Length: 415
Image (tube, rainbow, N blue to C red; front, side, top):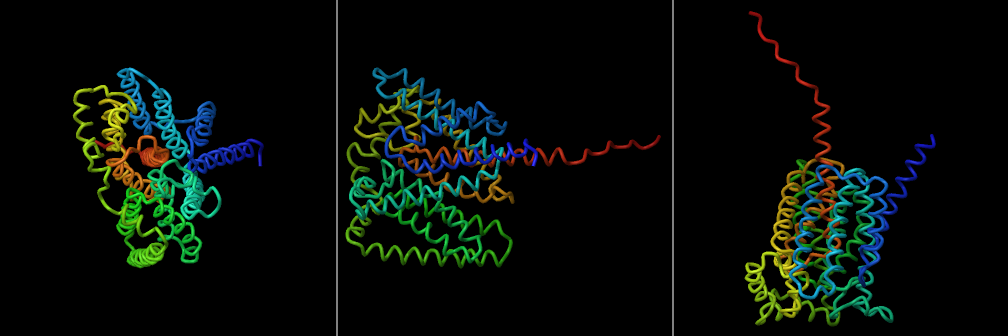
């Protein structure tokens, strides 16, 4: 091989390894700044210096995320005491750039999708094992991987740990439903580990997200294929998977303490939801406050006033980023859902990854109505994965138009 080809291959391998390491680190956020943030900030900076290309199709993602953060900077001017606000907004801006970064690299090199998903599964299995070990006190000091007697893995909050596991769980379910039968036992093990991690997080949001993602994934696979044989396989595999999960669920409920915790967490309304200044009451107070403060009140200020944060991404946007941030985030959400849905079932090499990322993204946005998802690192990864596919489809359609032969000029009839 010529030296130029060798160098190109070497650079590609180094780039792939660098991104894989970043995804692996995303499952370990015990303290902030997390290793993921430090590593990815350096990686994005280096990549930008050596040729990060942002497709025209990704520009809306960049503009809307930057506009949202400008809203946060304006909201900061309304604060009497800045406290840790500059650091908070710096993290917000970093996460915005991380979404643009993942969208850019996948749109240039679609093969990175497979690497990202595999690395995500490995990270999810590792942090799930830590959470399960912590819940059962498997070794001295394992309780550090729990919080409020719930599995938290290598995260600070079980309500973030659980949703983090939804995308890799959905992806494994996709491979299980569509892959060869011989690989099923191999795939079932990590899927059961991740499912157990989601269950022992006792996060109602994560339970709902995983269930909704699995249903949407199965429905999309059923609609996408015109093969009766494949549709029958999807139905049979779905029934088998549900039966297996029910059996595992019934066995787990026999373990000491699990049944009580499940009964407590399975209630739709908790005491902190309906209290005098509970979650639902704060929603009303917050939206009334937003009418009086169009520039917001500043990041993290709401929690210092009412004792608890907003626990709602829409109210969070209004309070922390002002109306500018709220409109930017709402526009970005609707754009992502609409543009992703339009290309969701098109037969492309990257379509399986788009499908899994898209249904997981919908779950995160739905959950954001009841919890703050502003600084969830995996949400911005999902944004990047969906927008990378949008950019790939844009490039694919442009290449088709260029390859289409120009129509011959019409010949006017002789007079």
